Length: 236
Ligand SMILES: *Cc1c(COP(=O)(O)O)cnc(C)c1O
Image (tube, rainbow, N blue to C red; front, side, top):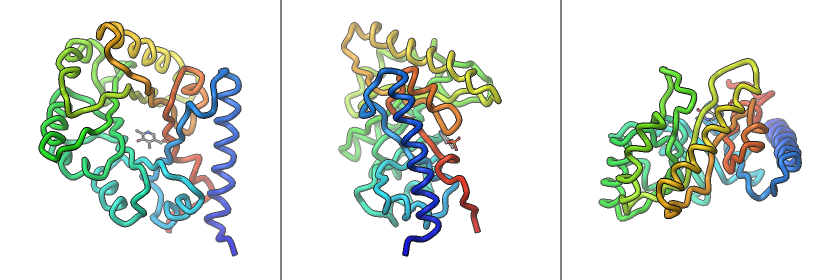
């Protein structure tokens, strides 16, 4: 018998996949260009197990402790995405288990990752988080600050910078995300130009439950979806 949790997750997943396909079709993009990351930060462990049984392999967590403990409990084939603010003193513990870090938001963190990666003999795949909307309260590089640090970042041999991440401002109007996502895509091109074409920044991580269609429209390759995936389930 299939549990009701699995049934709900399976229905939600199907709906989200249909939304992704429709958004790709509208944008004239191939479905293969977009990876769905299931954000499990508020999900109970049983729900995450059910998602894995349904074939999900890309999971995102926003707290390093939870990412590390779940990585230890769940199957080794899962790719873990660190999407929340990362303190420098947590870098050593997450590098051995993380597949991508989306939330690299300062020069000091970049340097801490380089140092730790070199020590551990790994080369983590990262995205630089950019605060394109300029909200005071938000994490992320200021674009000007990132542009000045960019030559230095490109010399770091133990970090693979593969793209950029941003969060749209919280707003009832879904369309308000669009200029923010457009700006992130434009800024990615500026970084590539500044590297004289040497940098390859294929990935844009932008779009959550409410606005991932807009993200896809504006070139997202990674979307981070939590609440729509777990709709209809309630925590004990
Ligand atoms: C929680 C979170 C998400 C998922 O948001 P939903 O609106 O629940 O889909 C995506 N990205 C980050 C960085 C988050 O913290």
